[in-house]
Length: 245
Ligand code: OAD
Image: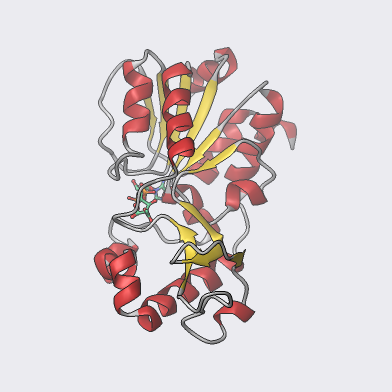
């Protein structure tokens, strides 16, 4: 722990990389592991464009459930700690695989949402229509595009869809250039996002991993693994706990 605190204090170009575990203490479920969403639901059916087009009503029920869940949650103290650290450091880009918008809600800036966001929807036919995802929009399912009549889809990256080119390119560039990466709450299994911490390591950066479970990241003297929850550890690591005492 002490080593991790020093690494953060000494770093000049730190970057944060998060996954679903970052939000679990806010009440969001992760995807893998014993209580993971993919144990209960099929990603091929519910999180693919093909699935949406084949069965829009059922797939939208699932999005509505996730949206309702997202709408009721707030960032936990671990998020506040990252916001606090971002203010202390000159720059602290946040690369996230999460679509719940909690980094932004916690007041963080320079957030790269690799897998998009649940906060808005757009037309599957890419006619240009886009609107916020609201309670009203999901009253009648599936929601359709008022301009062209096609189905609307949340602005998240579905399986089989490419990631936004500029966003993933910048994320990899940040990984190459950082001297420290905080890898928080991700199983590091879904590519191309999973390559980001490996790229940081290969480029000479150190890693602080915060995750109660072991992941694919190697055991190395350049990787400090803290097997605890994000909300418990981030306030201590960043110095926020001392500030609010
Ligand atoms: P996973 O569900 O694969 O992994 C979540 C990780 O968070 C696990 O390694 C847990 O041990 C860890 N974890 C759980 N609670 C935690 C806590 N309180 N603090 C810290 N860590 C905790 O989620 P991701 O790695 O984010 O893709 O999954 C990547 C992608 O797979 C998601 O973005 C999603 C999914 O399919 C799309 O939707 C495109």
